Image (cartoon, rainbow, N blue to C red; front, side, top):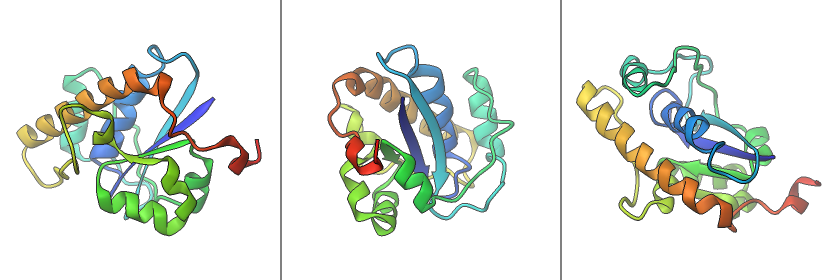
Length: 162
């Protein structure tokens, strides 16, 4: 089983959407089992997903009502086989926790042929901005599904003592 961790800032908008989409899309498209989670570099422990994230998710058949935010920790970084961040500064935060983890940490847009750079944080924006954010994340996850079976950026298993 491979563990994928999606990371954003507050773990209430982008990474919960990526986690939910990942859970919907990836298991049926990969030739191995995955465990998918999310966290935030500046998350307040236990906060629900933002209301607009919940609404956009519902429009696309996803349920974020039970999501609760959590802080990115050393344990989560060490436990993940692949860390996928929404922005460059989230990747840098992973590197501050464990520089070796950068070998298996990528921007979500690294998996896309259409998008690059950071996925902008929609927090505080209207529902239309959340919808655009959802669509970018969705396109990136779809692209990711096609690339992961041949991806060589997974954490080397020897580092985790497996």
